[in-house]
Image: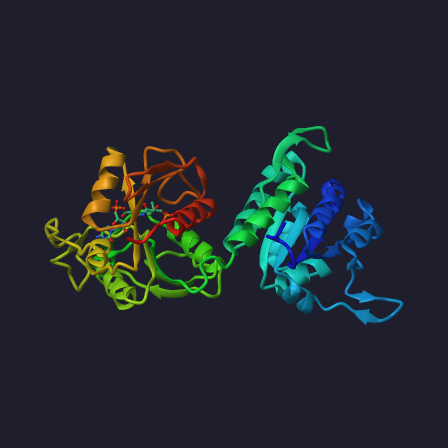
Amino acid sequence: MDCIRGKHIVLGITGGIAAYKTATLVRLLVKAGAEVQVIMTPNAKEFITPVTLSTLSGKPVISEFFTANTGQWHSHVDLGLWADAFVVAPATASTLAKMANGVADNMLVTSYLSTRATVFAAPAMDFDMMQHPSTLRNIEQLKSYGVNIIEPAEGELASHLVGKGRMEEPEKIFDTLCDFFSRSQTMKGKTMLITAGPTREKIDPVRYISNYSTGKMGIAIAEEAAKRGAEVTLVLGPVDRRPSHAGITIIDVESANEMLAACESIFDHADIAVMCAAVADYSVANREDRKIKREKSAIPNLELVKNPDIAATLGRAKQPNQILVGFALETDNEASNAADKMERKNLDMIVMNSLRDKGAGFGTDTNKITIFTKEGDAIRYPLKSKNEVAADILDAISNIKHE
Ligand code: PMT
């Protein structure tokens, strides 16, 4: 398998019954040409022996900071930097909590904190532990740091309870890594402009018009593009989240006019632009510089003016070598509204999400999209995490052919 040949994989194994499956994972990785360095937590050794794993990986397993009898020190920093991918499988509730909170009390978590590689974690635990609010919160926290969670499967667990909590099979973990390496660097050399989040249009110094966008979808696209090697500028409306990928340039804006100015200043140099922001369609012409007082004044009449259409403005400036992608957020007549927006704004592709679909649109961690192309294709996708949706959108962009 060429996707993994020559790659450096750190495999962190923690103390859960699924640890026995990591022998198969190491074997698959080594057979496909990867170099695998196993790090075990002390508890992991109760479930599978270091001898098995060092034999399969061809490298001594690391577990402690020091080898007592030789005085050799194992550098967590070197290990973290050596890795092309850092995989924690199985990831117990305890290790997930330590990773989410930076509790560096063993070699595995210390190396995790030092790595610059893409991190994958394959949780495995009993059903009730998996559903506990603290586990769910830690997983969410790790996702926000950019950790890729390989969701556990459902089935019979070691406790004989049936539910979600089984570590995903080694073959599936292998496929996830293979997909990751196949995609990485496919956008190297491309410059990308992405808008995300809402805009705010001031009424007075304390009030504004806005919408429910959280920036999750646009940030996921920015993260995925950066992982694939693109040089990404994210023009971000007022949201309280940030991308975790250090390579993304962020321009913070508040209003639609500020977003337009930021986009116009960089669009010339962009190969690809994705307009994911939920831009407020109107701003207030008679905005007050002082707080409108409730008691004294009559009910204010807001005079609304149309905001500039950023996507349409870029669509008019677009050169034949540039790709412009828009979103359509719909509540009805989805297909015809999306097709109309694609035409009017001179887009090369439009991503439609409908508020009629449960789990789609604003604020959710998931989305359900249909991609409409200029050639008239409509590609429907099932409900997926916003990270997976971002990957689908970038795959579709890679298939766009210039005229
Ligand atoms: O941020 P999240 O909480 O994760 O939610 C994600 C999302 C629902 C905001 C996102 O998936 C989405 O649908 N974004 C586009 C929202 C929107 O404004 O859609 P629209 O159909 O009104 O606009 C069509 C296109 O024109 C969009 O690409 C929009 O960015 C662009 N537009 C709209 C108005 C305007 N004045 N200028 C624009 O550029």
